[in-house]
Image 1 (tube, rainbow, N blue to C red):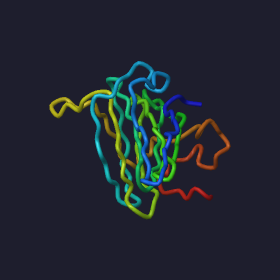
Image 2 (image 1 turned 60 degrees about the vertical axis):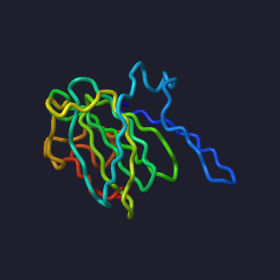
Image 3 (image 1 turned 90 degrees about the horizontal axis):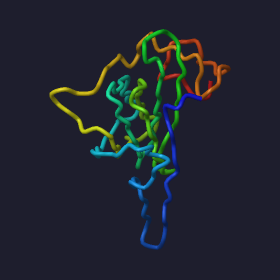
Length: 171
């Protein structure tokens, strides 16, 4: 399967006061693979909001931690725009804390899939440069995004079709 997204479960320590979770540690070497977060951001997406597609040509990684609601996170490997490529999708939510690392060289985006706004803390490995941003963009409904496999499977009914962020997951 495409190594575009890596997910780790985060430990939630619960006691009578509430809970505590570590959401980023520099000693997570297997997860960070030599990269180091340099900026933290907070994002709120309203239900059904799609934020896609973009990628980072200079090698940035994004690490998402959804703390409330739920977010579908997708990455697509059509780096040279040569046609169909593999797509990886995960759904992360506040009920099960996870750190979701997206390799920024892949096209990626998100959709809020909960009935409440999603709240996400995310870390990036390159500081945002307003004068020279490391972002290439495509429309959220780009007709050139046609997965040849989804999460390693070529039998998914969405394979071979233009990617539809709104396709019901149960069909």
